[in-house]
Length: 298
Image 1 (tube, rainbow, N blue to C red):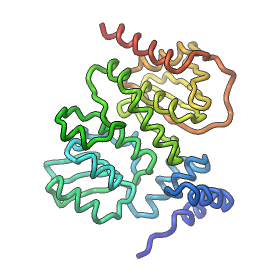
Image 2 (cartoon, one colour; image 1 turned 180 degrees about the vertical axis):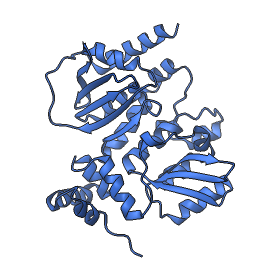
Image 3 (spheres, one colour; image 1 turned 120 degrees about the horizontal axis):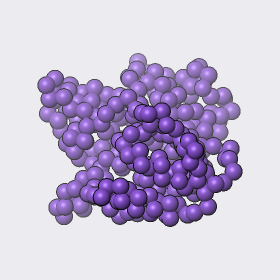
Image 4 (cartoon, one colour; image 1 turned 60 degrees about the vertical axis):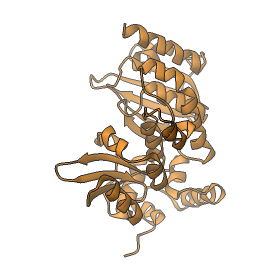
């Protein structure tokens, strides 16, 4: 049976208007890419709405990062070239049931499923459909964690993914170029940055570096398990406003970074910014954050 068109699904659900579809199609014609990604980039839909529509289109469960723990062991079994080519990322490999769970941009891709079966030596593959912007960001994030120093493997992995994860603070300093290249790729191909995730997937420092290179204007909402909440605003990639409880400005950013892995965030494009309360450059804030983290680990 032929899949229902994504624009028809979004219109039927009331998520977009015909005018918004036409505008996104115009962007797609000029810049290529997927229609859903352009709608997301333009701020006409949220990632949740896009994944809901994709789930209906493919008749496949939708992938939401905050509902899954991604197994690094499973990721390491799939070569980067395969993940990048098929835009697919292993979520879990259950050896007991011989089942591999995968998030993919196109869950109907038969070649992708067959490749996963061969790689993991299993017949059972469970596929979730994911938004392309989030999945590309995840692939970059997880494959930068490879630590194999062999010349062969280094040659296979692009410079933008060849970061090394040792000491957390050292990695954050040395990996700024990798994050910059990743963000530049997102911008040059008109990929949106609206998504939600936990700090276990992206540290706040990594996130701010990537968004800073993207030159986007966004609002970041952050929460932790204790109920503490914060807001950070960026204008064209520059951090300009932050608040976390009674702390404001750069101190609020430092407070959120001190949460460690205990946090979740959502990123959304915005045109409405509060008055600036941060006037330092991003680099100064992030370097001070790294220094404070170093001190806290002594």
